[in-house]
Length: 161
Image 1 (cartoon, helix red, strand yellow):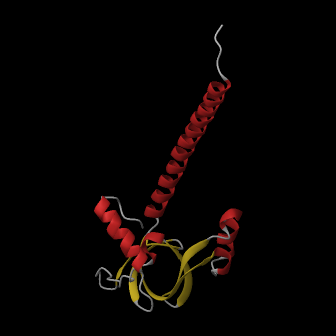
Image 2 (image 1 turned 90 degrees about the horizontal axis):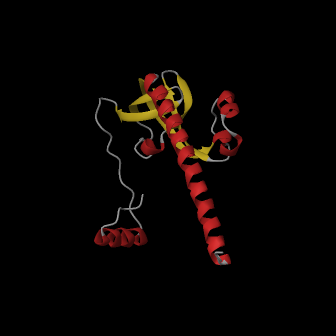
Image 3 (image 1 turned 90 degrees about the vertical axis):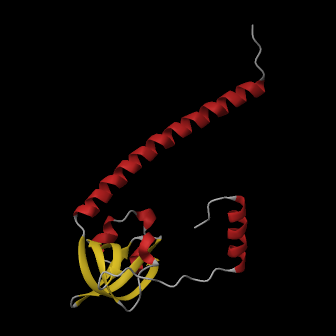
């Protein structure tokens, strides 16, 4: 008869639970990736290039953003308190509130006319009015951030965003 210590039994149970959690996370991640790919394909299919004057840009809560009521109704309750990048722009004679991709939010110039790639109320890309790429001023980094980046560079690590 084998005697297995209590510690071994506890470690085996913990290992089993960890393996189960990792398997669940793997399959959920695959499902979420598939949904994101489908949504990206829909955005690509519906995108248009529009000339617009950017009035203002802010990160604000969806309920305070001035987006249509239908957008608020379709937003899950747990995301209504999160801040999203919102751009107020004049498109033709209308002033609209549009959502923006996080990746390009910092590149959008305020009080300038741009050509933007828009899919519904979502801005996915921005260029200068005559097709020129926009050049934005980079913010100065604090001393602490500069020290961390130099240390990472010396160690060969990837920089933080």
